[in-house]
Image (cartoon, rainbow, N blue to C red):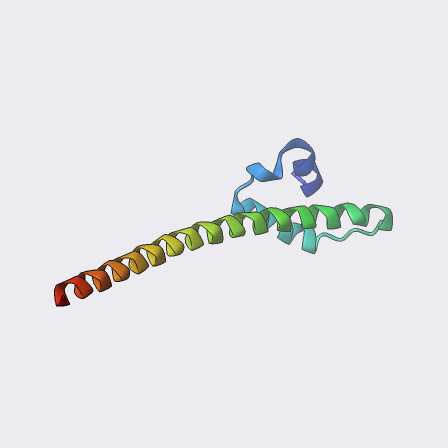
Length: 90
């Protein structure tokens, strides 16, 4: 199935990462002699890259959320330990 056929029959959001990479590779290797059709391949490649970027940003967002929660927990713990030490010295 060609890239254009796949775009016509399926939703790029449903493709896994391997499929996206394979299609992008196929688009980069495909010879398109007709200048009137070349823009379609460019738009398809941009669509694939956009979907890959969205997925990567979602992963980064999840990692950042976990890291933020860990930092907040450590900060609260440090403040509590500091308060306990202040009250123990009195």
